[in-house]
Image (cartoon, rainbow, N blue to C red; front, side, top):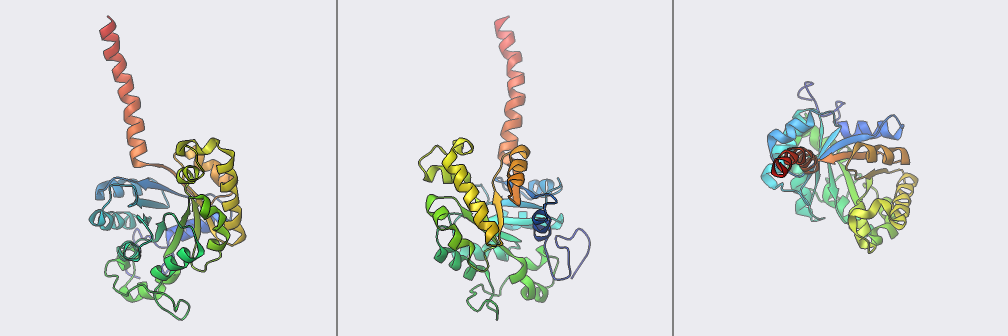
Length: 283
């Protein structure tokens, strides 16, 4: 181990803040909490990482975060003693490699729908070893050790145990196959994507919270994850929703996203100012 100052890990073997927070959630001592970033920027990531989160997720699927920004932001987050998570655009091996090699403590893979897809994801994330002979990850992670406060040798020794794999269950097909997906060794968490799940069922995405079929599917995924001994996560845009999901049984929740916070606050403030303009026009 290199340093104990503002370390993103909590043990000499590289156990991450994310892992520790999920253990806390399993003991029902509070959820694993984080924030979602859509914007690029080292300073933004560093600022958000100091707000009390266990982890900060970089959304490289829907966000404006390219490869260069991902590397910079992972460094900013881990140097604040917080776990960086990267949501990659798709389950392509090269995308997994880039996210892992920059130092992500976990990757989130969207639209995992089958056991076979889950197995391929695990192969792409694991170094070949006696426990993971099917692993296909190449041993060229030059930058990842720093994000774990480790030497290169330490990182290679422990990465298979410390890097977590989160798959998103966000379609009707995925819900139908979630038990088989959860049974795949190496998959650590099932994460419900409620917007796409609602869309796949023929509903308007943003109405998911009020659709019984979507909520029944969500409960099913939660139950399957727990029965398989895996963690369960759910997207949330407020602390109130996050708390409700935790009390429902989910372990891993966010309390918003940078673009939502920015637009919500600025809209509210501009509305107040606009009232002054409107009042002047009336007078």
